[in-house]
Length: 565
Image (tube, rainbow, N blue to C red; front, side):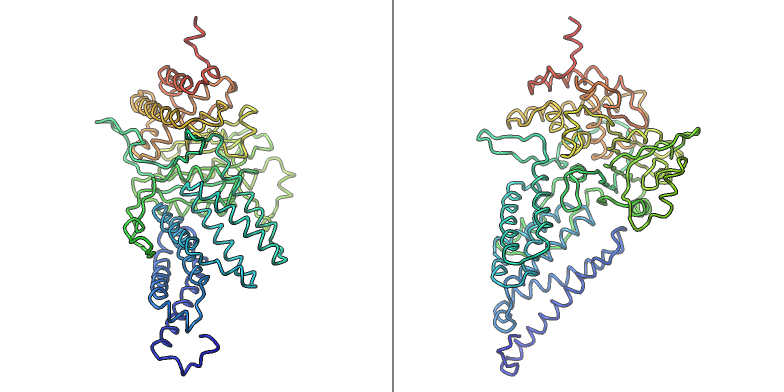
């Protein structure tokens, strides 16, 4: 209550309003702070706590709406404090999304973050001589930008980055702070992230078209009638990013960002479509979960990675598959061993936890010992007791070719090229070409052909033709008599079906491209695909040349029919 007020002068009802508000505010802060103590893995432990936190914030939000006048006069409620509550609700929705992979929660987070800006809740903060309040505003901007990136609202991201830049400049001029470099790094990271796509699609007026690459209705070739494929459903995915020097923002590398979208359906609004214009109501009603649950692990240590992997494995429902996506720097074996087992080919890098260096110096002296900070193929063997789908994008992806299916469960590994032509290698900071093919094959195809922009009409015609190619690849996989059954076991799931089809397209396109000459420049798989039926199919090669002709880049591809003349 404001200091000027004598408590006895305040009517009892208004005093109770202020007391109730203070109680709800304290309770909400206490619950929100407790969220960081919850285990990050496991589906069950966090739900009841999240529910309680959400209930209190819903009550707090409605309470301040109903009693705004009393709280303004008797409590001295500031607009930035309302902004703080809205920001926390936005964060709750975002964390709901991270925990459940339900994309509709992103829209809910966006509606709260958007309202904060539209209603200028943080506007007065700059007039107060309190740097910690300005930092709250800067953090709000950073969180809002992450949500906009995930919703592909790139035009808005550019506006927000400009505003954030001005806020940071004002903040560093007014307060002599030590975190100026950190905030400037945030700006650099998001700017690089926005510019990461190697090819832009242009309207007739040369403005950039933003395309979503999430799974959309009708984008997956349907199964042929009577086609017998596995009934496995992709239930869980670990998306791991540990590439040195790759564009990143907020613990998401560009490869992780692309792969998480390849494993999500296009989001739908829950509440904001139906609620009255201008009304902002928290809405906890979860939509039907149609996306696989995901863990996003940025530069995890081996023990962190194994903990999350074990939690996913333990909670995997019946008739479900687990996907492990590894985008990481390759670790190569140091010594030579007479016996070549699952720990003799190296693997991919895990983060070195500087606190734990037991025996590391000894290890370097003994060539026979294996690299400790590395996920070896053998480390995944225990998890092949359940259906496992592995994607490795690394300079040492080939180490995962030496897999053994010990338990007879469906197991597939899709492996990136390990060597790229120099022109492609120079682009690797902006994300891997292999992951780009799995995320947006046309973007990757255009990029590898040296195109930097494509006009919208041509892009849409090429996408339409690509869907015809997908359909034919799907038939090649299901009709092949020599294909390993593991591929068909996963083919019933829409996400995995699309990844397999895109993988075949990527392999076939790179085999025909004149710059890709070495065997290490082609993707591989475990088990091997029958090449004549898939990646070297004459029908598929004909389609790729037609696509290249459509984009006017046919001279970059080998054309046997022309060379036969």
